[in-house]
Length: 72
Image 1 (cartoon, rainbow, N blue to C red):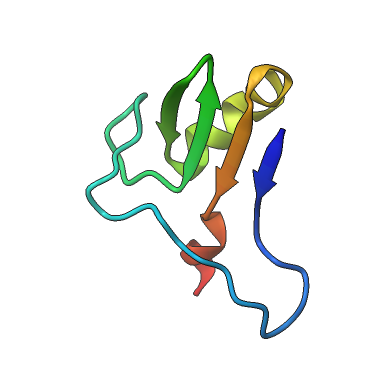
Image 2 (cartoon, rainbow, N blue to C red):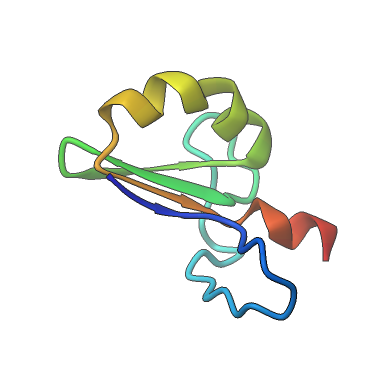
């Protein structure tokens, strides 16, 4: 599984690909997490991404996490 998350190194560059137009599939809030499952992309806000993370990571082929943007 490919994983992109917040870099641990100070000054590291992280490329963001989710925009304000990307919405959570559960509630419609801005999406900060994208998971690919069975060839389909699922988008989640930080709340729902964390809520379903354990189950999704076991079946996802990729996990893209931009929740670090919330603390910038």
